[in-house]
Image (cartoon, rainbow, N blue to C red; front, top):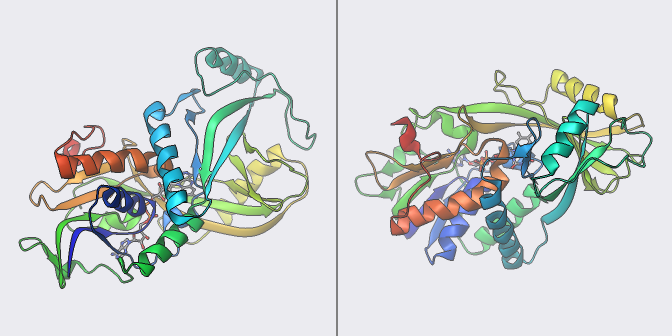
Length: 342
Ligand SMILES: Cc1cc2nc3c(=O)[nH]c(=O)nc-3n(C[C@H](O)[C@H](O)[C@H](O)COP(=O)(O)OP(=O)(O)OC[C@H]3O[C@@H](n4cnc5c(N)ncnc54)[C@H](O)[C@@H]3O)c2cc1C
């Protein structure tokens, strides 16, 4: 069996990268073991162009957003499914000082509007008003990954199995019986133990989320007050998330639940019930930039990982750049290139 590209991992990184190769006319084969707690299956899937602490655009937002929008809309058409939802985020100010800072920043930031409004819902703590963030969206990741997998199965483009590094022969470019031109590892947090890329500073950052039912929140918009409340349909909301750099287990914790509930209680005074509590490990890097590139000794082995907290927004732009790099010798942004770690 032969393929141009062999992709290990069908989270959002592998899915977007593989599909980007397909759009360039390449044959692609995926290997994925079906990790139920893959970060992509837990994530809220939000695209937010703002960094709220300093009230500035998040890194490369102007470049990333249009590529992400066009990619996900294209994939919706290809799969004949709807999973790319557009939102506004309502950013609630925690103090008068923050509101003034927000208003000042809104003068020269096209993604945010001044915090002139008070929310109609009296159950939300809203002493200092909120500002709107435009150009936000959500990719319903569990759905798109499921639908894309069905497409791969139907077209015999996926091996549903664990990738076994003993079967990889990089001098002959084969994996088991499969001959490839390029193999790319998109393993998320499981890439931490990769024997070829163990010199990269990939880390695991645990995140937990609650799914709640709360009729009285009554919002079609995403609410943020240092944490987010994201509408998920039928009076359900995703609430989170937490950040833990020390616990590398996949189990949801009582501590994580308490942290989220405490934040929720400080903002929303109405009733709710918890429907689900999930946890995942984000593949993060200390410099907060992805890990992309080809192995210094094996040109046919690549990595596309380290998408951190913003995988949904980053993946389409950098998949396009990486594919251009591999196929046509285009430049990789040095800030994401694994060469920065020698
Ligand atoms: C609570 C939480 C909330 C988040 N919210 C957001 C958000 O709102 N917006 C956002 O952009 N990001 C968010 N993230 C981050 C986002 O989840 C990640 O950036 C992204 O999912 C990483 O995708 P990935 O494909 O690299 O990794 P993963 O999703 O972990 O996928 C890796 C895949 O590789 C496969 N794999 C690994 N090793 C092997 C092997 N040996 N053999 C076979 N298959 C293998 C696994 O089965 C898996 O399918 C959140 C994360 C968490 C935990």
